[in-house]
Image (cartoon, rainbow, N blue to C red):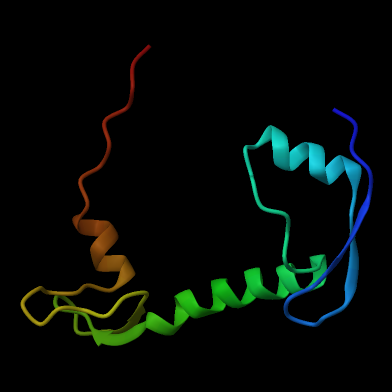
Length: 100
């Protein structure tokens, strides 16, 4: 199948960008049926903002074991104890070495 470069319009910034023949082949190879709707810059901005929103769920807690203040990447439930990184690591069972 022969592909040709296409000029598309970004849905975020309304700028024009080229959807190259190579990119089209990649999309087909990966089974992606829709053409990109955002330019590479807006796609990168959207990706970086997605990663930032994951840190918005962080909470400051007092460790249930040592009492030290710590930040955790989730909102704790009231019925479960929450530990700082050091106490949590100390409580985890060590993995047995895998023998070949």
